[in-house]
Length: 180
Image (cartoon, rainbow, N blue to C red; front, side):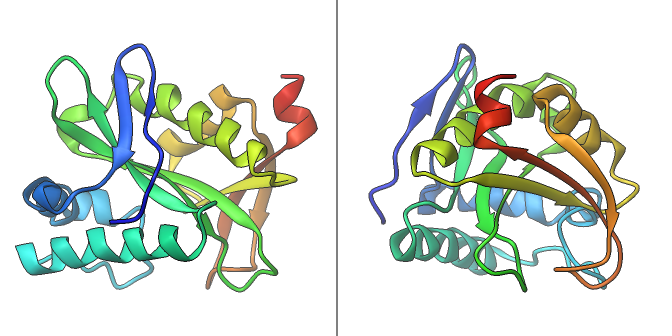
């Protein structure tokens, strides 16, 4: 596994995924109601533990290849359960742009976990340094748009680049983040 930093907030621990997390990864990613927000159509729920283990290894390899990027497990300190993921990844079909993203198990939504975890990765991104970070989502993903607004990210509206079809686009720069 790549040497990936861990972080703590009041209620959460952000850490690298482990192979032992594969059953929870499968539980999260086998759900259409999760995958519909992170897959390009057609939505393909995860099928088995082998695929979950591969997902962990892909993110580990991404971080090893580019330490600015990666997926962190959001672990609730009070239960030790992996609630979901917060991540930094390349924006596809761009010239090195980076995006932040997240997804949670349905049993962990509505608790403010993403709003608590995402600022840690935004701060990390700007320490590496990245001049800006995007958040791209399906145009009807109101919960993620609300998180972006709570984070103080600027709504750039609907764009038709990087992904096939339309995406809702938010962005923050280092200066905007520093002075928010």
